[in-house]
Length: 452
Image (cartoon, rainbow, N blue to C red; front, side, top):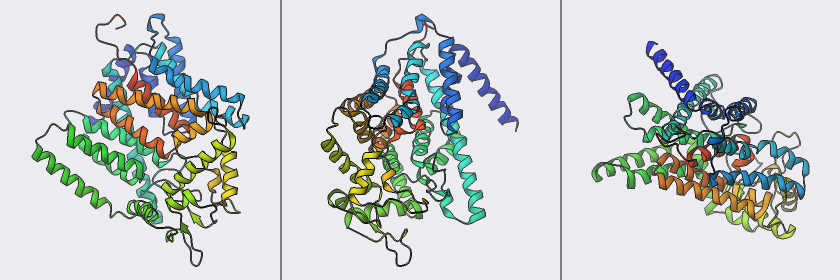
């Protein structure tokens, strides 16, 4: 108990000291800590950050960093799309959710620059907070399982008609996977690791797999392999041994029911058309998996056709191409967050599942494109798409220039995540991406510089 008290005391002292050096240090910490919490708390933290930046504003702190103007330009384009939006109210409502694209870069542009050590400490304390969140969700899962005996408590997120996942549906398992993965790579690259650090590594590693995001698991594994094969400072013999042990461990995870089930459905639907989905089917009411080929070519579907993740994203990409051609929106898009009506029209045209009468199950017509590149192209057109690509390329190049593996992991996790999720349609996604983008891509304050 005394050790815990001493550790907390050191943490508070450290945060206090860094905040004295840079006034936005603590408010920025509160923003990243509160990302998984209810929106109101994160909004308060964001507001506090902006107010602190304005109160402590000094003319000499203003910096011109072109990489921070890209998200601002993207937000301006979202605002301009009000002029042609096919759903003015939805676009207007979305602008308040997307406003971190404007506010966070401005905060970094007008505030005193962080030192590299301060930047690293933000990542450090964010990572420790993810350890605490992971512990909370795992303890929550154990309690739920002990009461209900339902093993779903340990995997993914809840569905429309229940909330028995590892994390709530509103929080989204895929989003939490990204937060946890970044925290894992912080501890993974930390020098001078202690026993507790290794325990945190194991906890976060297991958490990534329990959250069961196929995309994140694949990229997460790929990043670990890249590190072991090309970056690890160990002998070839040790490297090969560790790699074999790691691959054997991954193979053992394939026997875990829910994780295996999610990958198996994707594999089966890639190989054959209209396989029966035994998980969803009930009695004589058969539900059939849609293959990637069917998602791309079928002229119509049936209400009992189920779209696994990859097939659904292929279908969404297909209707995006059709919508752009039919509505001539290549350069303008339909307006920020205004494409839902067009998605619904296509759902009716293709006769896909539209939900049940009791509204216990949401239909496919209410889902976004589940691809950030497609989503931004559909909503604000070609120039919005280019701005997003510029941000992602800038992110990768800066990570390579700084030889920062945590930044490198963030960059590639974002690129891959955007292929399968409209991550920036959610406030948590916007706050996380823009905060980390600004934090990793801003200039560092060099020791003994005039601003220092």
